[in-house]
Image 1 (cartoon, rainbow, N blue to C red):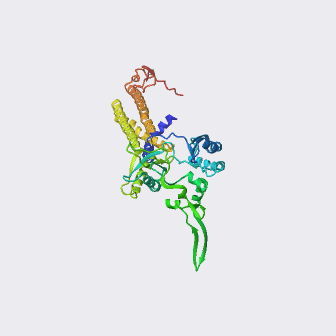
Image 2 (image 1 turned 90 degrees about the vertical axis):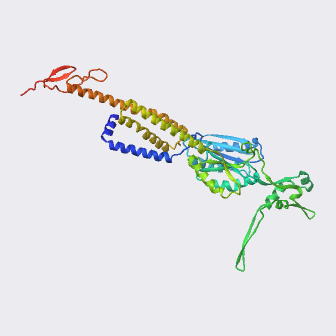
Image 3 (image 1 turned 180 degrees about the vertical axis):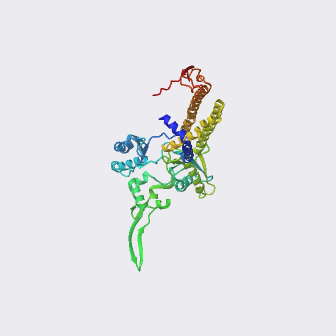
Amino acid sequence: MIEGLIKFSLRNRFMVLLLAAGLFGWGVYSVKTGKIDAIPDLSENQVIVFTEWMGRSPQLIEDQITYPLVTNLQGLPQVKYVRGTSMFGMSFVYVIFNDDTEVYWARERVLERLNYAARLLPGGVSPTLGPDGTGVGHILWYTLEAPGMDLGEQRAVQDWYVKFGLQNVPGVAEIASFGGFQKQYQVTLDPNKLTYYGLSVPQVIGAIRANNNEAGGRKFELSGIGYIIKTTGYLQSVEQIQNIPLKTVSTVPVRVADVATVQMTGETRLGIFDLNGQGEAVGGIVVMRYGENADEVIGNVKQKMEEVAKGLPEGVKFNIVYDRSGLIQESVASIQHTLIEEMIVVSLVVILFLLHWRSAVSIIIQIPITIATSFILLNAFDISSNIMSLTGIALAIGVIVDNGIIMAENAYKNLAVRQAELTAARNGEPAVTPSGTVNDTPSAPNGNGQGDYINGQLVPKPTPQTR
């Protein structure tokens, strides 16, 4: 088969050159359009189920949330195993699927099973799916430089403006905010006053919820004009919460301000985010969606940041604290530099030892064509061009060149043997191979017509017989 392939290539040189040029062009296109990242994504194919039930102990979370979810998610198709973690007020369930399972198909199966498992959970508890990212999906971290603005205002800008703007970038799964204070209305009850007025905590909570609502009426027409009746009851200030009536004592209403202190404050935090020891900062983490091109997504996010920055308050700007694109570019540039050096060194060595430029070119030209074909296969198998895959290509250059040198050396040897045979045939001598052995193949006919030389002896021609 190999011999037939060689013969076909020699007889159809133009077709072989055309095929090589096509592969090279396809490879160049694959290099430009392929996925680029600094490190390979070796994370498991997983779906995260997050459930929040604030104020409950880890043991209660384990018994009433984590255990029911884990037992119901174990029967899904193509699931390898299910892990569960319980902590104060939160539950995490990790559903690990087979590596060849499509991630969005897996998320659909988990959602279907959650619809059934939700009935086993306490009232008011709603499990949600985590972002469709991976463990190495944190591609960019940024903070907001806002001199003179308090942490609560910075977090509000991040949550209600910046986050929504950056989430629209293609390939971004989530913008995870961190740092600062999340504003909220906080009602601090006085137990002594509750006892004095004969009130309970559920009564206060129910009164606040009932007043923080809208009720719809009906529509009626009067003099050809339609009117819609509704009540507006959303709370918009601390004073409105303070004036909510709880009960009436001797025709005097007892308000929330009589039994509690109402203030605008930040949500209770379990930690802080500090930047370079210079104080707290507010920012976000850009999480890349599964299977996206990291370098392209980072470029799109930076471009979107320029648009979002135009709407920020005066003096507020972005400060990028972690950017994987620098690592990606340095990794790819290092490998490219190594590839160019290897190609130059190999070319010089081949030319120096062969002393024949056409043979050297036939060997050297294999390097770019083979590398280009490698990128075609990387794209076909959805493998990113990272430091591991590019290093493998760099290490394989020696093998690529070895094949070409062996073929060239074999061709030289066979040509030398054939040339020795032809020279011996012209001189009427036995053909001696370059290794010093006498060739046993017949030489050319003797010029005097008496016979042929075989192994140095004259063999007379047979006399033709006539009838």
